[in-house]
Length: 272
Image (cartoon, rainbow, N blue to C red):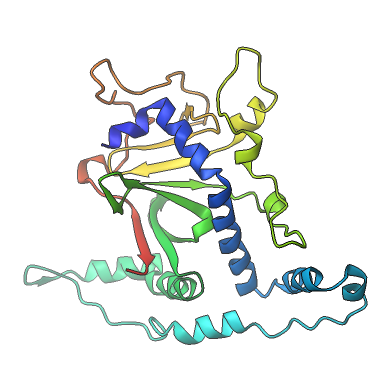
């Protein structure tokens, strides 16, 4: 099933869905809530007033936006990890104290506390475990940071995660009628095909980066669905990493470092 991720046409379809208006709207909501959590919400109050009143009237008003109810409520409800839990790790009957030190080095309690708060104001988030400079790290991903590709026969299970940059500078603007004014990439590059005459947007698409993780595969692709080198992000000239029988061609640029363990380095935190 995961082999679909190595098909060029399927990768282009993934990008098309990531850039769809519905998905962009979902990410805008997540991004706004994140900014509000950071006490950066004055302009959202102003935009809401401008939808109901004339702009001139709003300009003459003194806007007080210093009471952050979202932040207060989410921090109050996030009761987990307000106190550090006591953990004891065993393999069989033998305690493994090294695991406790590993959790401490990673800062698990701190990141889980942040994740609990994010869950309270967003309803969903994820954690990614990754190695860096010889150490394991955990980072919090909010809904506008990633997309999930489910298994076709089991929509509740993630087949892959796609991490990409959210272009908030273009999309995080709201019209007076309540609709977003940013031009989604789905509108700009709707067909996602490469014409015989060079597309004007080819250079833009080539600079986009999408980081794909599944149990078996991990690769970087650009906005045209082309797989890039993990080492220097140069183009790897293969449309499909599949042989004539449809089996994956083993290549370091597509294989997950966790290939032998059949697991994803993500923890999904969401409502049931």
